[in-house]
Amino acid sequence: MRKGLIEVIILVFGLLGSVTAAMAQVNHVSINSRQFELNSVPQLKVNVVAQNDDVSRLGFYIRQLDDDQFLQQKLIVQGINRFLLQLHGTNVISDKNAQLIITEATATGAITLAVLAVFDAPYSFKSATLAAHANNQQSSAVAENPVKKLSVISQKNKQTSQSSSTTVTQAIASVDGATQQVDCLIERDNSDTLWRIANRYKEQWHTSVYGAMLAIFEANLSAFSKQRIHLLLKDVPLHCPSTAILSEYNNKGVDRKVFEVIEAKHAAK
Image (cartoon, rainbow, N blue to C red; front, top):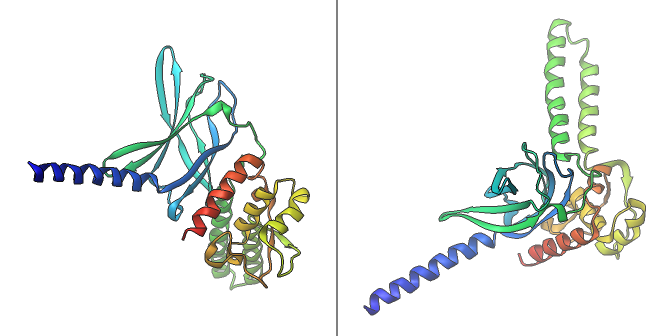
């Protein structure tokens, strides 16, 4: 009997451990902003900080009350950057008390990580553009242009070779511009901390010091040792973040929370 009791205890603690491990994969999740009003289809931006930046096991749903029945729709997910996701659905939301449900798939089934009030989130269209989606379109243009040019070269004995090279160069520059402002470098010296730099530029960029730090980090990952936000390298040029990146960070409270979670995550590694 004692042996059986021990086995039960081990099993229970094992299950608890697996649930804890699964939940520990997500350090933070919150609604960044919503890009829709009541009686329209949902569009939301969500902050997510996950271990190893893996959000593939997460599910996002909106639950609402309609004619005394709870209806739930799964949202389509598109990545904007490592810490920001765009969500959108197809069914109209008519319940002012609608909730965003975030789940995580585990070996024992889905668990609920958070339940958030949708219309408590700030309404903002400033940053509704999908930077990642724009990048994909621009990258496609880079891939397609050489193919078209090669066809012309084959037919006209390479008379358009120089034009092809120019087109590809311009397209690549356009992709880089999605994260960095062209020919714009941040002024800094080796005594500057990330906080000090961000504090100096926050007014110019129309964001908070936390938003500025996140924007600098996103636009200059290679300038941080091991890509950790608290390890800014010296003697490395910093590029100004693009307008698309800066538009993602327009909520001081949310940006502060996201920064603190990322900093704690990186410092613990």
